[in-house]
Amino acid sequence: MTTRDATTDDTTLPSGDAPDTTEATPPSSAYGLGRRLRIMGAVLAGGLAVVLALLLWLGVLVPAKQEAAGYSAADSAYAAVAIEHNAQAVQLAALAPGRSTDDDVLALAVEVGETSANRVGALAAWLEEREIAVPAAGREALALAADGLDTELPDNGSGPRAGAGAHSHEGGNHGMLTDEQVDAIAALDGSEFDIALLSALVEHHYGGLQPADEEITEGKDADAKALAQAEVDAIRVEVVEVRAVLAAIGGPGSNDGSGS
Image (cartoon, rainbow, N blue to C red; front, side):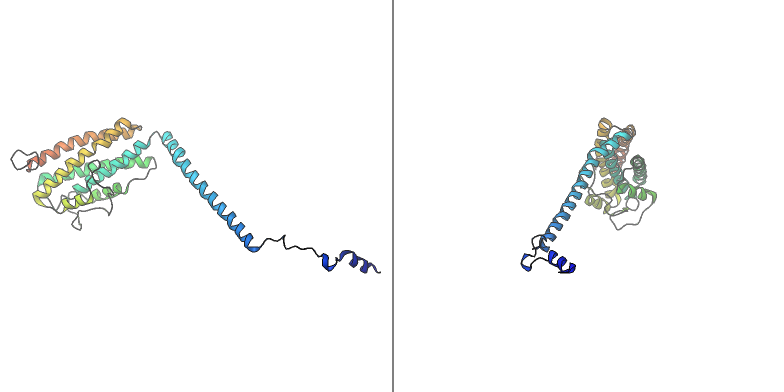
């Protein structure tokens, strides 16, 4: 026997003794299922990590950032609410030109609108200094005031509004009017408009006292508390002025027998 023959005989198994490798290779379907399960597990783990990171950010990092900056959630919430409140006062004041013919009403509307716009600007600056987003209503109110509150601005009959949805509120909260209530005032003119506008401003201004008072007692940031105190002081003065003009034109509180 040659060396080649011996090697062949030693390494070649009988045909009946060939190893069966079928069980060592998993079916393709089982492999695909396992792969999908591993992918799903990775996706779920990634999603859980995102959720945990968000909870950490909301529960730890945000309060820590506020603490380091010297303000609280109550301070930032007040600034946002007060901006929306003053923004609506600007919107109401902008209705007067073109609807009122009373010089006192027109002058008062400009005063209220400009004062409210100034408060929006101060509150927006407070938020921006702390890298907090300014409500859209505030930016739009400032744009409305910049166009001039002493001249009639073009509108579609419901008032010169800076943008649709500028006030996404339901009304009845802190004296805020609903869009439907603003529309009803905008549909009037002459003395009916004057009385409706000034009556709405009285209720609206009084409503702004509550969030400001809460900030004064519960706020942390000294600047925010000072803005709230300035708001309270200004509201009390403005309400007296509005009620005086309202009474003079025969609205509620007048002494000529035409008001209630």
